[in-house]
Amino acid sequence: MQRVKPTLRLSAGLGLIAIAVLACTLTTSPQPASTPQMVVVTVPVTVVVPVPVSVLEVAAGKPITASGYWRHSDLSFPPGGIVDRRTDESGQCVGGGHNTQYWLLPDGETGWVQVDLLQNYSVIKLRWLNTFNGRCGGGRATTRFHIALSQTGTFGGEEQVIYEGVMAYSLSPAYGEVVLPQPVLARYVRFYVDEYYGYGGGLNELEVYAAVP
Ligand SMILES: [Ca+2]
Image (cartoon, rainbow, N blue to C red):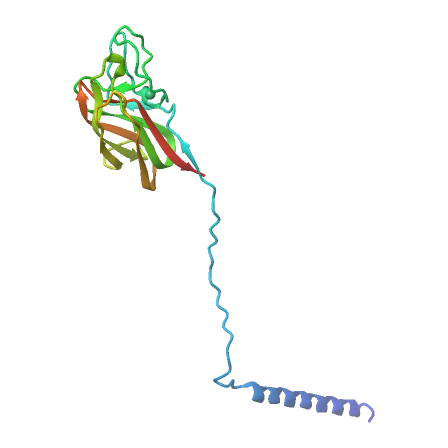
């Protein structure tokens, strides 16, 4: 008999729990339509961390090629003169030595000169300085030109022409400049001489500025 009493108490206890659960269920469901609902929405957020950017001139001393250049047994004007960062055009002509600082096309030709930056850069600005052929008494300059950028160096249609311009012949030419509205990714920069003054065209300097992280 003494063992029965605990069993009855347990049964009574379970009954109370069941009633409590049922009561809880009846009092919590269904929810009133007007009960405010908390809705948690996860929104992906992209955090942009500003990266410091420097603007560097990236063409000085880089490899140069050209469609051609004016040459003589005593004196020549190879294309490397456009990135030597020297602008002196004084000196004698034929017989005056070979240390010229500007590029000239052969007589009576249009053509181009090209810088290989050795890697792609985000090009944002270019500057150039015309020639007047001061070393040989004048008579040569570029008067109409355009500049194109390429990632491959093919210049077969993939290039992007970023500037077209004209320049007047002058014994003291000034630098020209263009700032691009958007950076252009490029490794090769080609300057085309489309028209020239006198015997032929040329260029003294070409600077290429890029945004570098
Ligand atoms: Ca030069």
